[in-house]
Length: 95
Image (cartoon, rainbow, N blue to C red; front, side, top):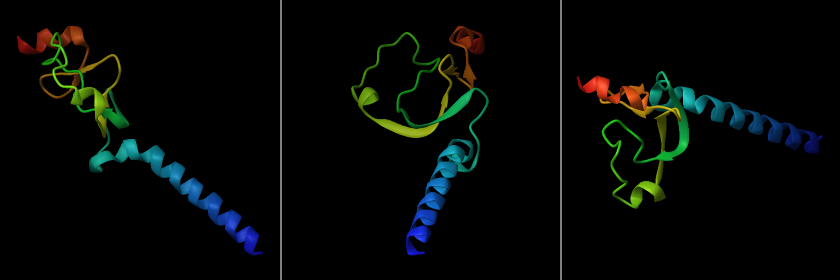
């Protein structure tokens, strides 16, 4: 009986862990990630943005450290207004 209880407990804990990992991105910071955003547990601390486009990465910290949070999906960059936009739309936001 004790072996069964331990196995059941292990399965239950694993299920809870999986559920928490799946909802972590949806509930990050008390809110869900925005439109065109995804949660990353280890994202760049220097994400691509309209402001940084065309500039070289100036700090080695950008490539060596990561932070959890909501980031723009791969084909988007962070716009001047904080929303995720296509890179080609960056110049439209400044006009």
